[in-house]
Image (cartoon, rainbow, N blue to C red):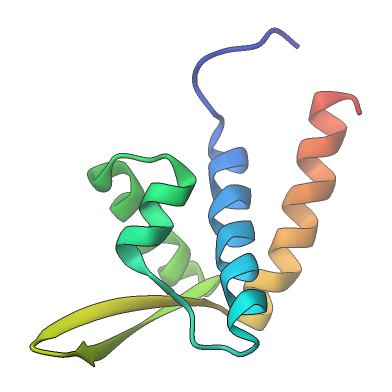
Amino acid sequence: MTSSKYRSSNIIIQTILETILRAEAKNLGKRGIVKSHLIRHCGLKTPVAQNYLDKMEQAGYIESVEEEWGERTINLYRITSKGEERHKWFVTINTELEGK
């Protein structure tokens, strides 16, 4: 497979799920990750990231929760059990496609 500067949808979804899983592991709980941090860690532009996050939430892979943070409201994203299952699936599929 030739390398490209663009990532496939599968890789982007896998990256989003992995980023949420890492954040939850660091927090030692299911608090989640702040939306802006998630977008930055995944290396996505905001409109593209929002499109993926909306689709993944509709599919039941992730859930968003609003929390008060001082005078602001922030969005936290958490992975669901379905998202954890799909993460394993995406890792397997992407590994097979890359031939590793």
